[in-house]
Image 1 (spheres, helix red, strand yellow):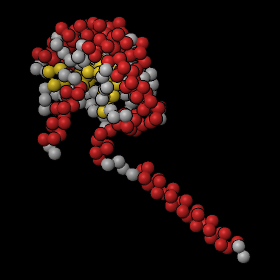
Image 2 (image 1 turned 180 degrees about the vertical axis):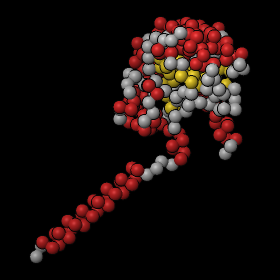
Image 3 (image 1 turned 30 degrees about the vertical axis):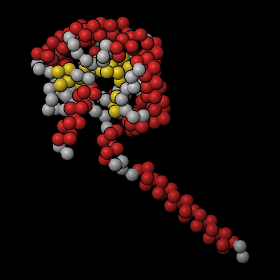
Image 4 (image 1 turned 120 degrees about the vertical axis):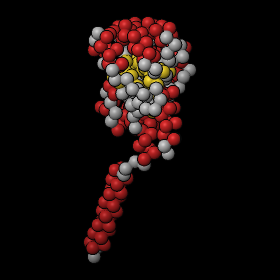
Length: 244
């Protein structure tokens, strides 16, 4: 006598569970709203209508070249953006402070320079926030820009950066200076591909130090103003506003 109601109740329970699973699957796979996707999307360049460009340096090694790079930038009155790894900043707090004191923009490059696409979203958030705390403690600056190690841009790292309050920055010109080519090659990679709003990726290497004065000279001769990435993004926001 009890078998039939029991079975009906069990079937009803299974139906409810199945419906919940379908609803959860729909929610997880539901497309993100356009404003959310736009906020998460990495930035490769600034406003194409303004003759400005940004020099960026990803720093997790090469500390021996930082003083020379800072001197060259100071001599030429150029502001750059330094994306600094948290572990490097801990190891070289004085150099980290010098970069900030020189008036350059400080960005976040994660803590231990892992492959972000191999990490979970929570692990990526930990990398970003740990570095955020270190950079603030050493410089008094709370960065708002994040350059993912290796330029990896999977969903986990993009969502992590957005969750941590960061804008993800990549590049439109890669000097590939980490391979330490001849300085003339580094210079050509910049000057032959330069365009309005370009974000130029560099690292602290000996060839970069030797190429940097010529890069700055040629860009100035071509009429480019070298600014921080944040300044470059202001121009991008103005352009977007004009077309809304």
